[in-house]
Amino acid sequence: MPPKSTTSTLVDRLNECLARCEVILTKLSSPTPTPAPNPTTPPALQADIRHDFISWSGLLAKSATELSLALKPPVSAAAAEGTAVKFADQLTNLNFCLEQLPVGGALTQEIA
Image 1 (spheres, rainbow, N blue to C red):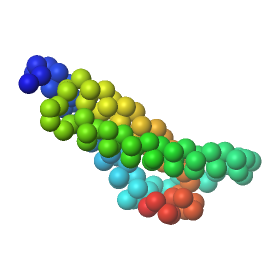
Image 2 (cartoon, rainbow, N blue to C red; image 1 turned 90 degrees about the vertical axis):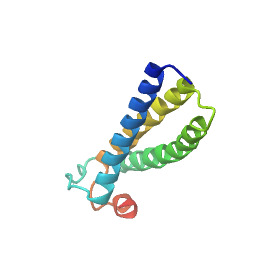
Image 3 (cartoon, rainbow, N blue to C red; image 1 turned 90 degrees about the horizontal axis):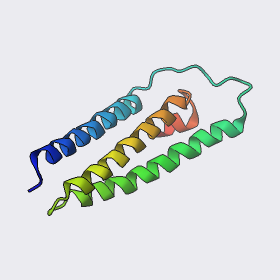
């Protein structure tokens, strides 16, 4: 069994992931209106945001699998913690993409 401090750190990282997931799920279930994109914003930028959102979603699915495998016995707390940190960072990136999407846009309606 890993030392208490390592286990404690892993639990903290997992709680951080959970908190970030809750923020994202709240945004998806009840989006708050955001200003419409600037009319001078190039459509390519909107396409980039959509592409980033889809890419981060795919990476999250992969990382969720990696995290679940890292938590299977025997658990290596150090490996699981590294995977949890990576997962939390990807959640932050996905959240940023969500914040960039205008409410009422096609992608926002599709994911809500």
